[in-house]
Every structure is written in structure tokens, then in C-alpha cells.
Image 1 (tube, helix red, strand yellow):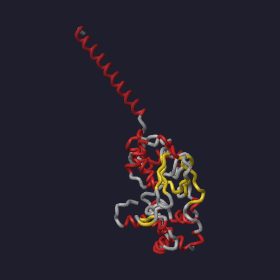
Image 2 (image 1 turned 30 degrees about the vertical axis):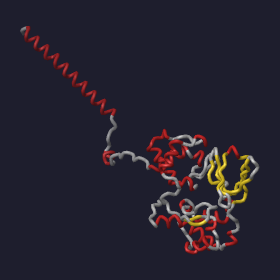
Image 3 (image 1 turned 135 degrees about the horizontal axis):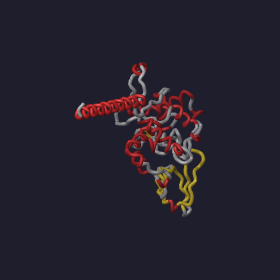
Length: 294
């Protein structure tokens, strides 16, 4: 055999050996890949494809934020605690616009211990606001049971509510405006407030006695107060404005201004009717289409 033939055979053998080694390496690699991959059983094949998890609702996200950041002070139901006031039923909170509440959440009230929440971002702040609105009863209907027509007559007549309370711009000025009171209070809660006004928490509706540093004493209802001033409405309708630096002492009388004894003055049916009428006022206003949103 010639030298050229021997060289050709040697080259062919080497080429075959290298090709076989590469083929084996590829086979081993493919086996390793399949071994690491989960085997698909016929049962798996019959399963429906996994759906991506749905994002939680805005209210659910808002509740999580509220529970972790707000509930320790305002309570889990938003009705206040030892360190922060009621934000679920107080009219001065529930009647504020969404923009006002968002502004308050962003800036906080540092002087009263409420930190700013601007760092949460717009999406989380909106979710938090939605949850606070749900605590306030927005979007829910409070059942009204009772003769509202009878209640309307009692309100202006036998019960004498209109002497102190205002409804839709008419009535007295000493008590709170009841036009929207039914937004966040059930008939049972309103009835209880009528029968037992002394059980209403806080000093709202209690007469305050303000002693000025010059010795004069003024009596009335506190309408507005901040760290520097106090506004007092006397029972004759006169407003008094005080700088806190001019006040020597402020004392609240233990008994509320609203008289007791309605449970003896009115029958059970009359109390139900009066409470039902007050609860229905916000719905009546909504039906008139004046822009009020329940």
C-alpha cells in the first residue's frame, strides 16, 4: 500500500472517531436537559393553562395599607382610638371632597402626630382613600324603617328638633346640621342619640365655659379650634373669637346641650319615625338631583 493510501485511511479513521465523539456528547447533553426538565404527564396535559394572578381590588389594597399604617391610631373600623379621632362618621371628615382628603393624606398633620403619606405614591393613596370611603359607608344603603312622614311632622312639631338643628338651610343653629346625618348613621344609631345624648362620645354638643385672663366667663359651643385660637358660639347666637394666649381656662359642662327625656316624651313608634326621617334626609336630597353623592 502506498504512503498516500495509508495517509488517507488514517485521516478517515480520525474523522470518524471525532464525529462519533461529538455525536455522543450531543446525546449526553440532550439527555441531561430532558432529565432536568419536569416530565409532562397525560394528566398535566389535560390541565388548563395556569392563569396569571389577578391584581387585588383597590379596596383590598387600601385595607392592607390602612391596617398597617392607620388602624393603630384610628381603629380598625376608622371610628377613632386613644391617639386619633373618628374618620368614619365625623361630618367634618366625611363631607370633605376626595381632593381635600388626598391633600391631607399627602401632607399629614405633623402638629397632631399624623405623618405625611406622600411617599406611598398616587396609586396607593387612591386605594387608601377608597377604603376610607368604604368605612364611611359610601356606596352602601342604610335601611330606613319607620314612618318618615310622621317623623317629619314630629321634627318640626312635638319633638322640637328644628329649634336647634338645621335641615337644608332651615332651622336652628345651636345643634349640628342634620341634612346629611343619615349618610353615616343608621336609624338605630340616630334613635340612640336622641334617647341618650349623654352617651355620644367626646364634648361635641356640650356647653363650654371659657374663662378669659381678664376674668370674664363666656358660655357657648366650640365651633372651631386650633393650636392658636378658639371660636365660641354663645347660646344667643353671638360669636366670640379668642386667642389661646388670652384664655385662662376652658371647661366643658358634663351634660349635653340636647335635652334628655325623649324616651318619655315620645312613644316608641314616634321615636322610630323621627329617627327614620332624619336618616332619610340624605336620600331625599340625592333624589332631587342636587349633585349630592351618597
